[in-house]
Image 1 (tube, rainbow, N blue to C red):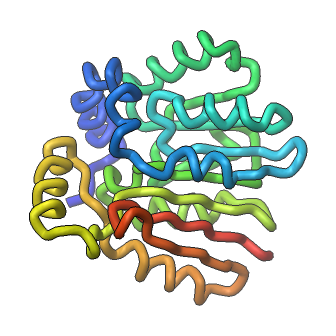
Image 2: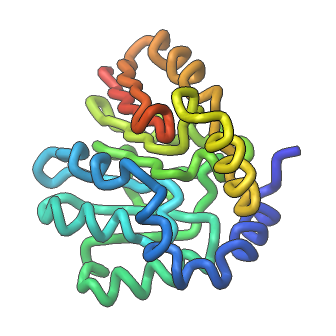
Length: 219
């Protein structure tokens, strides 16, 4: 059963109430592909960039430093994570360039949250695997793309080319953090690629450990 926005927020706050303090230090060893995603964003001058489920703000800070002329936005359902993100963004001296808010990836209005009708770049980094109704979250992100915009996704893959014992162990461990790799993501993106106005690039990384995708809204 899908969680409601309130119960999902409470669940995420419970998970990250203490983990948020060590999140960035530990996740860099196994959330692979995030830095490639940031390097690939390549927004237009003065472009708008949104991170769905921005967590501690680590990715937004890295992207803002790399693209000083872009405008950045992010939201998360966890108030605990947003508290950490605000502190990190302020310490980085980027609070004037990064706007973050509380929001639900499965139902959000960019105009209401940020006064922005659509974004030139949107990215979702290791978040679809934590959102039980992940398909609606994907659709919401697609809907928030401006014409010509791109949606970038990096997340856990199907581990198809890795040893079975590794896949079993990884998924058992991830389940402790309410993380479920979305093996259906490739099929869902094929469906998106068949929709008018969208092009999709999809590839597995590190023998399927991670998956990486870019969806371009062509019209």
